[in-house]
Length: 108
Image (cartoon, rainbow, N blue to C red; front, side):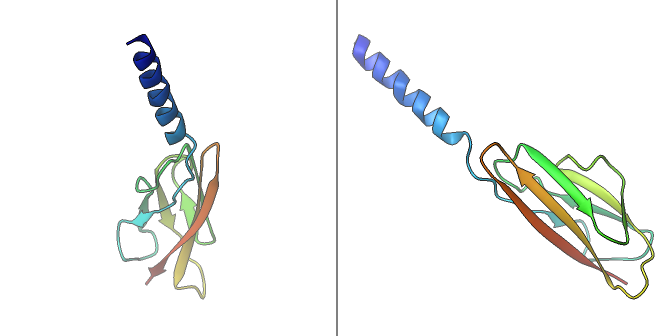
């Protein structure tokens, strides 16, 4: 019985340890399909998997409202001559891996 208990404990420990440190999967979703200047864009990356840290990076024509390190972030659409889209980069990571995705949306 003692050996069975030790074996069961070892298997449980291996199972828990193997679930840690998995590769990240990045995803993010906009709250709308298109935006106007001065609108607020909300992005949600809670659909990403195995993430310890988030890093949001707005490109030209956007102002980030938060700290840029949570699963959700908001941005103000600024005027930008000659561009009908805005792009936001997101890097998600954990101790094993990181992935960067870019999300673009239409600005009317």
